Length: 212
Image 1 (cartoon, rainbow, N blue to C red):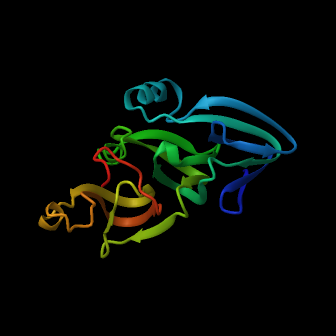
Image 2: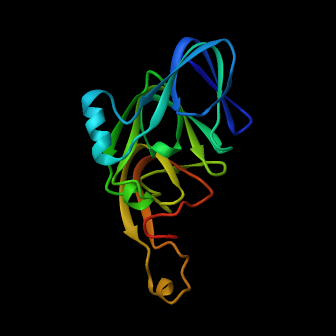
Image 3: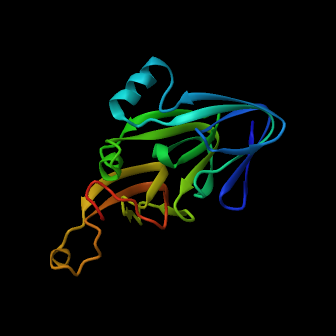
């Protein structure tokens, strides 16, 4: 299995001994040893994956990198966080996924929440299996724990990914104070309930509703 490590907070180094990884297309910044690069498409495998990508618009332009040596990846100086999966599933928007172990399965799933908030449709990318994944964020990502006693509300523009046994609900945050201009400005939030982890970034993307 390939070995992931960070060099600083904005460059991912992946060491391979005949292994392969899947990375965001164009994210390779350097490599040593012998490597091959093959462009492919994420979001699901085979004919079903192709149909799903066309219908949902949740598409990853990725490349398969295989060889012996070390390959370095980065994307527009974004911060990088590593996530280790041990048979679990990670939900993440395609634009926030930098690199995964080739053994991890990627797919597309309906959420009814994230895409509607983020402007990429009502679907998101899933990563499942055993291995490591590298996430991109605008600023250092923060990992927040959710428990049954402590549900979590997240601004849709700051959401990156989540894992665990979590239920998601999009709820309106509009109150009388918001209408008269004294609220916090977040018209909608994603509410997470259950047990798991939520990854957020210290920067808010524009969403369908504008500045939420």
